[in-house]
Length: 97
Ligand SMILES: [Zn+2]
Image 1 (cartoon, protein in one colour):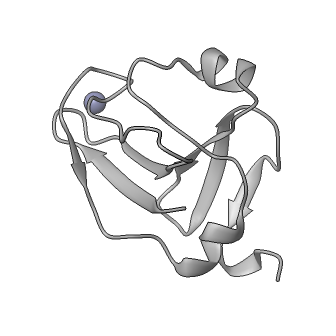
Image 2 (spheres, rainbow, N blue to C red):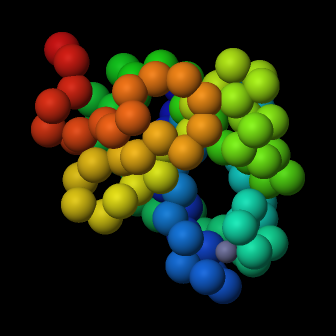
């Protein structure tokens, strides 16, 4: 599954998306509705982590209700869970495997 990182051009929010199956890429920032620009791919080992997903017009509670998990890049190599189930914090350098 491809994983992409996006930045909102309007408010600067960063988000990572693990695109599951045929799910569309996000087009708009969930926080402000601004345009998202795709950034560099995340490290390959993050692809092993299961189940994070973000899409425009999906609130955090909707993401959680679909059994998915959203993580937000904290800018220091760690990712904080914003919705769903799973570890509260992911650390790029401490992933299993
Ligand atoms: Zn935004």
